[in-house]
Length: 139
Image 1 (cartoon, one colour):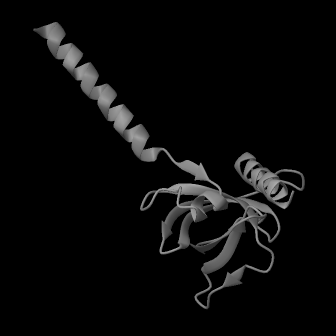
Image 2: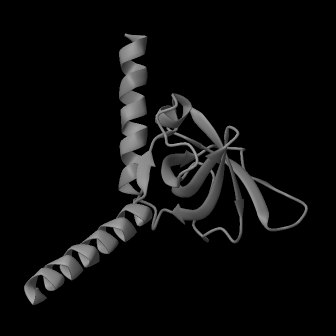
């Protein structure tokens, strides 16, 4: 009976760990995948790409920022309340985490590139895939 109780406790602990892991799992999607409806609705995920030139606009409250993320094929509008990283700029790589609500991505976290030559791997891959798709269509 003692061994059976120990096994039951072990299974319960494993179930709790797996449940916590599943709740904290965040998937990455490109702007093209989001616009095609492949991103989860009502769940947190990440979008990566380039900050579209001319898209950064600050609201009157001083903490809300609107901008757009693009993979050169599709553009997703983003709103974010908070302080942006110092390296966040138009035309540079970024990854944003949050939820899609009514066609606008409500970001809870913004990650920017680290130096002149670095782009987050997810953002670089998204841009590369969009450029390949655009070349295939134009041929």
